Image 1 (cartoon, rainbow, N blue to C red):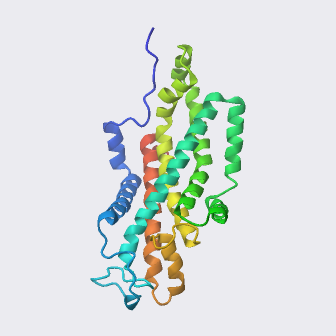
Image 2: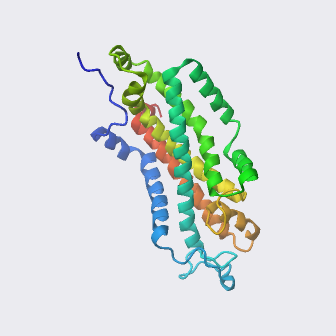
Image 3: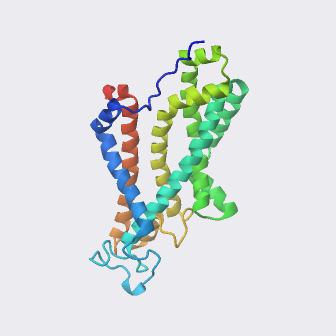
Length: 291
């Protein structure tokens, strides 16, 4: 029996892939900003200029100096140290929340595409129902039952991501199920699970990676919003969103306390969005040519 033809996944690496990557301005800028965010979070595990948990009221609201690079907050804590550890919190929430949405949503989308019929209808209607509960609303409901905290914020953002990944996976997988190499695999007696894992999933991986990058940016923004409202990361763990919340009453005394975390959130979201946009052009060069 002849071998079953398999399409080369768009994710495959090669000279053309890296040439497009280095030629994409969005990818380059996004990769630099995202790398800086990751480095800041990694550094905070082994070193910070001062302890982000050390309170020194005598040193509160100090301006930027050689000792405190970004000054101190209303409790005398070093702002630079808070920023570094805050990056760690943002990345942790983003990775876990997007991971929940990616794993569960992708599994549901693949199941809907493979089984069709009632399975597809039920999963898609559940996805529609999930869109009615954005991350902030879900966090408020979880907070009312279990209390505020990072774990509840992660669960809320993760649940919010599931319908998005389910819909994208199902749409992309349906396209692959109609391709000739999948029809050939079915004619050779392969089951739905084998076809999904060996042919469908590899060919939609690039779409999922791009979407995960973009959802990562949204998760960081959602975590900051939840922390700003007091529903996310709780004291004493530093958070960019809570730093903004604490700075709003000091806008005229120390406006930079709001500028630093706000600028960090903007750069992180911008970097991840540019990275996702660049990756989309790399995996599908036709999109780049249309621009």
